[in-house]
Length: 255
Image (cartoon, rainbow, N blue to C red; front, side, top):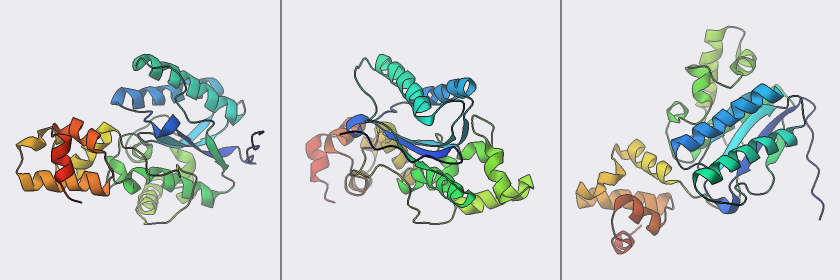
């Protein structure tokens, strides 16, 4: 069957979502996240697209982007191919990394632009990885409040206020709102967390290094295993690998 034609944006701005094939992780270690950001920077210089927000999760990513001197589909293909080539080399694998073509939706006005901006930055919170967007390392939220990077922060902040300080206050308040915003996302079942994300969940919630869990009291061990296995859906095999406990030991913890 022929592919459905993408909805075109009159502003040239799109919300993009891409995910790993078969829900597999596309980012495993810090070097992977950094490499993808470097790839964005490289093609940003060449194609002159504007990037307003990004969030890199374990097995998918979100971008808020305005196409540059070529159609957005070509840009995303270049970025995806370049990163996949590096990832396959890095992990001695072959074949496709991303699941089909990326998803996209047009962003036609300031109201929806801000909705998508917040939706992207709140992804790690809704996934239970952090309690504050500022604590997630691999999104553009920090670029808005702390440091310059590859994102054009002025465009969004100007929507809040022409005064930079007032804009930042409104930006922060806006992102703390609890919402049920609906934007494109992975919608095919619960995603698999990477090992790093599982470790960060425990560090964020319990301030415990998961690798040292065996040295803790059993009641703490069971509570953390119960949390990861029951609430977060981490597999027995992954928990066994990360904690050093046998699968049988983990299985016995009731959820």
